[in-house]
Image (cartoon, rainbow, N blue to C red; front, side, top):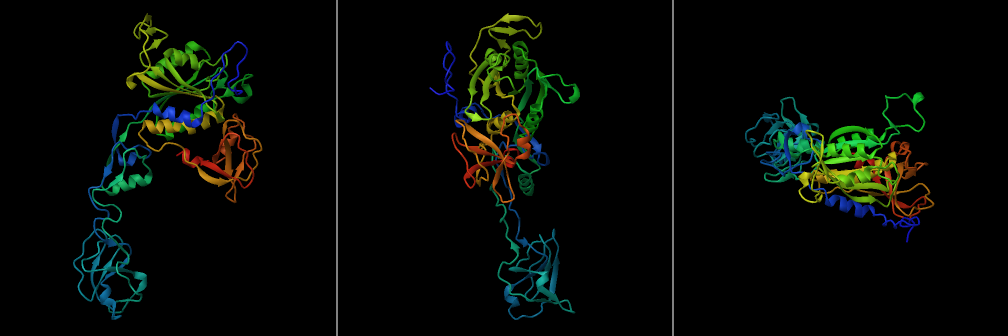
Length: 448
């Protein structure tokens, strides 16, 4: 029996902690893709997830065109090394006529290459004679500076795939084939609230008047920002008092019109931690504690949208509690809201969001590759004692490209997440010495 399984006399042993990989797999198994689709202007689709493939109805570029300002030529005509007359001028947006033998065409970037021409010469490689004839000074290979029709996009090609999260480059690519609107998955609707009588909102109480034991609610700010970066519609429900009745009511109301209820705090095992029994009274709790540091107290569950609380159903019109038949939480997803409870310590909340909530929300929107991606990096620090849990250490790259460690890795030190530019994903029990290769997850990867 491990220390995590040990129990006080007279109490049942606690189950072993769930690994992060197992927790993520189980969490994602509940994240059925949202089925509602929206048609949005391409200009407004950055960060949204495609609901269908985007197929090109044309070639890009549509015709062979010039990659440079210069002259369209026949390479065979240049063999004699003679200056050749300019037979036509072809600006971008116009079409020229077939190129006359023993002549060149003045051409500009993006203009269609005239029939008969087999290369383009940069104007810097040419000399214009007094009579206007053009002498090509350099050897010209066939096809030089010609962009071929379809070399970017071929007609009928899938240029963007269903489940792809759109980027600025994606929007430009869609526009290049004439797509003014795109079909995307609707935004997840997330209700966010914090629990804890110790929490105070910045601006409500000045620092010099903070009562003993009070802290400012920092989690609310970064969680809302993270949710919005993932394209969610966020309902900020504020701070819920530390009571079971208040927590149950907040959960019940939040479940009615949201896909996910996300809370911060109250998921540990203290007497004032009411999230667990509140969720269980309205539905079920499937995950509880995970073997990661920071972030062990994490909860996933489901809340019914029927208002049932321990066999009582509230009549919305009268406010009177009436007896109702208790039902299973399994069944039609339309009758359930997902619930995720994050720990209250700010770094724990931050890390568990990135490792678990972010993949969950991406899968809800139909993204296929959702797990955070790590790269190999070199440590420039000492980590002398590995924890029995999988650790996420706050680090940043130094001038040499190696990783240096923030000196205080406490779950309450949010400074570490601002100072750092990523996390070392450190296996259980693993020590680290300078020069060791570690797994590095860049914040740029998981905060986009």
